Image 1 (tube, rainbow over the protein chains, first blue to last red):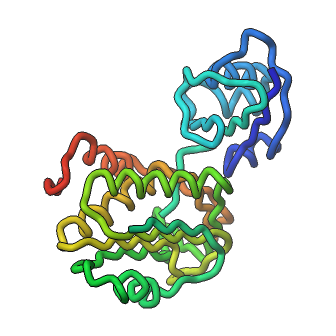
Image 2 (cartoon, one colour; image 1 turned 90 degrees about the vertical axis):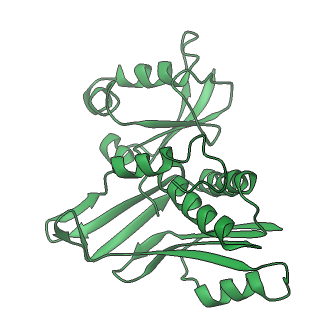
Length: 85
Length: 159
């Protein structure tokens, strides 16, 4: 499955990546599994996407839960808790 | 009945927006508005400017969803949510929320609800410049608490 992954705000700066297209292994089918797969890259990825870090995820531009399923071609975004207003 | 959402770098005119929601709309008996502005101090440091980032597409949709949620809870005529992005200075306006209704209770509560949900659900992020450099603003637990108090509450019961 191929997805586009985007990063925002402090997370984008920490990871040094704004957007990437990823061909996921078959086992990666949820938002949380994608986060763990990215964290397995090690380095800043492991540090900033570690379980317990305050990271939010959106799937298809809607706030998602860890168990939210991913589909082919979707946009997935990771970002810190929001601070607008 | 309309819900207006705008995300823009330009400033907004509160008076003009209020007039637009009142003139030609004789059913309106109450307009409640909130304006958020840039403070020159945060977490004990001086703030010389603020950069607001958003997630184009998702941000607008999230704000529209909040307006729909407010409309499901209170008797509203129109709502407006305008949020600025980009570089802002202390005293600049950041956000405007207006709710109109026949009677004040609905407008007051809806305005507060929209702001509480916006603070926790709409993808915006603030980066501020202080004498020590730039830093991303961290989310506050008090904002989560403010949004959570609306859960399960019916219209007419102010938290």
